[in-house]
Image (cartoon, rainbow, N blue to C red):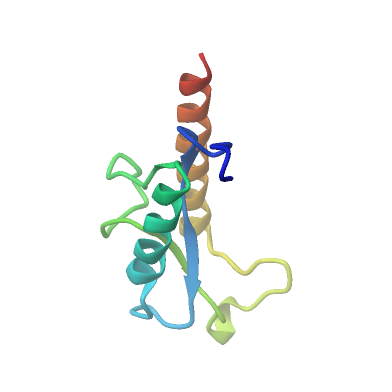
Length: 99
C-alpha cells in the first residue's frame, strides 16, 4: 500500500447495522478517509438507483428482524439491488480508469 498499489482505483463501502438508524452513514463516512488516504477514489450510490430512497450509503440491517431472518439470505431484495448498483458502478469506473 505504501508503494501506491491502491492509487486511483475506485472503492465503495457497504455497511450493516442492527437498527434502521444505527449509524449506516457514519460507518461509511469513517471508512472514506482511510480509503482516500490509501489513494482510492471513493464511489457512492447515486439517486439514479431506483431502489435508493434515502441518501447514500449502501447499507443493510443486521441482525434481521425475525420475519427477515433466513439462513443464507441476510439482505432483502432492495438492499441487494442497492449493493449491486454500487458494485456495478465501482466495476464500470475501474474499467474506465484501466483504459
